[in-house]
Structure formats: C-alpha cells, structure tokens
Image (cartoon, rainbow, N blue to C red; front, side, top):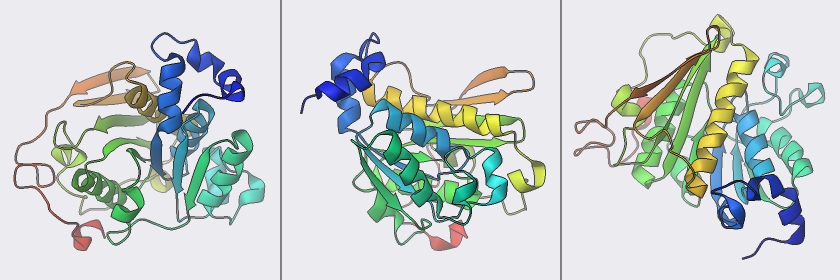
Length: 260
C-alpha cells in the first residue's frame, strides 16, 4: 500500500512532521478506529481522525440530534435535528474526506452486539456521557484485547486516559462499577461546549500517537483539567491486580445486569 499523489498533498502537514513522515501516514491509512458516540466528545474526535487520514473509521451512535446538542456537538447543525447522529456525522465526514472507508452504526451498543462491532477494529474510542456505557465499552475492550481511548467532560472540567488491556490500568481499576446513585449530567450540571471540544481533541491526539508511535500515550496516567484555571494535571495510576475486569480473576463474559 502506498500513498497516492492526492494523499501526499492532503496530508502534507502530517508528513513533514518529525516522527510521522510517509511511514506514519501509511500507518494512519491502514488503521481501523471505532468511535462510540458522535456528540460533544465524538465530534472533534471524528473530525480530526478523518482529516488526519485514518483509513477506516466506524461511527456508532443510536441517538438523534436535539436542539440542545448544537451548543457543543459541532458535527451537527440545525438541519440535522431529529436525524440519527451517526448518519449526520457520516455525511459531514464523507464531505470532508471521501477517500476513507467510513462505516456507521445507527444503534446503541449492548452486551449482545458490542463484541461483534469492535472485533475488526484496532482502537476503540469511548466518547459517551453515560456511566453504564463507559463500563460496557471498557469491559468489552478488555475481553476483546482492544486498545481503548476514553474521556469524560462535565461542567468546566474533564479527564482522559488510554488503556492497553491486561497491561495498563483499565477504567474499572479506578472505578469498580457504575455508580448506584444518580450522578450529575450535562443536562443537570451543564457543560461548556469548548470543554467537550478540548477533551475530544485530546482523545483524537491519543489515537494518532498510538497509531504512529509518536509520543507517550496516557497509559497508566489520568489527565485532568479545569478550564477555569487551565490547571492540567497528570495523575499516575496503576493496574489493580484484583480488578474485577482486568485482574487475574477478571471477567470472562459481559454481565448485562451491570450495564443497566
């Protein structure tokens, strides 16, 4: 597989970067990335991975565009209201870069379909705002041995980490299971649109680093930021040997009751 003349021109600013070059751009072209969520986090993730030339991108979202989404979900516009988000995202991304293999899944993930959908991808990107979905995706990635890039954003702050199953700390190493109490959401606590954009960009950057081998991904590190002070912190974390998911006696299947 080689880069075409059009690709050499389109991705020139990637190619001239030290550490990427044509070899790194070819890695991006061959990569397979599955993004769960085409909302506030997913919009910048999908835009930048598409612009960067990631050759195979899965877009998964079972929700529809709502007026309140438009404050931060920049893949969508007023004309997309009531349209499925994966379909709306696909249309914008295809217009940006029609040379890529884009696939859309217009449904929510669950214990019955997630392993089938992620099996042909190298990297899974979690861009959801529901705790049960975050745990489902983490647990499935551990079972399927898929690298996971994940983030959360709420109000004025966010966090991000990357996970290499059975090697680095997984999401369940930090938080054992979904909270049993009602937690604040964007609808109840609000979210600054640019915060979702910031952490979506961080996730896209993580994916590109992992694919090309440039830099140090956030394995065993949790990155946090409050934009009111722009205080970025990187917290060292460790894999829990007794983690219920990735530990020595971790899960061997997905228990649907945990993700409800």
